[in-house]
Image (tube, rainbow, N blue to C red):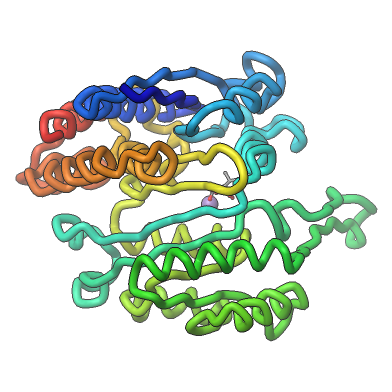
Length: 350
Ligand code: IPM
Ligand code: MN
């Protein structure tokens, strides 16, 4: 019997509920596959600020480094909106990315036939959408030098610096090319090379690596709405990837369903792409499917359990076909369920 160590970080808001749901699904799926799991509970984000005064502790970092994978819910909420910028809950995510060397973020955008009608785009445009955004995750303006506002009156100013090195661009391009080889073999590299020096280096390396095409980010934002089905793999910088992946998510019609994987040199981390939704926390209303699908990605990419990943993904698809819906994707005539019932419905189909 194989044994896996997984760190669970519920985080804040609906994080606790969606992580509990994903854990329940995993427990059954792993048991069926004869895999023993040791769950290691850790805090991060607001929950960690409340308990220890900082969003991310050395203890959490060390536990993640030692584990086979990390499954995270979501962090942040209005309760911590006014804390010092140096200890904001988001710092937990950024800190984990840096500490674990998670330079690559995979965000697959896929249309479930049973959810097509929820897309804000016309059915003809979205029915063939199936792409993945490969976002650089530990470089660029997110991790560049910055200075908070200083000076007075109209001269008050602040700045953030965008830097990319050849090494950083090459390794993310390699992952994008590798991802495309296993899919439809088309990589569009996205930058703003008509304005930014860092983007000109980005594009030069994308060309050396023989990406299929090179788009400016503004054009990409437009193409995602006009013809999203043209994309297979999109590789882009940290900031552009953050923005485009929200656009991709909403195109799929169900931001509550989209999983993500962050990987690199250390333990990989899996999380849904939606936030902590404090407005619905603690009410058993949150859609757990994005987290459950993130757990499936974890089985495939970190735990070497592709058959468990397939089983979870198939069960989720079946639950949707069978009409189970949390509030975010509910339509009249379908079965309205809460977080725990949704997880149960998935478990019954494993
Ligand atoms: C995301 C989030 C994070 C980001 C925040 C929470 C720091 O928006 O994972 O997309 O900007 O990367
Ligand atoms: Mn984001």
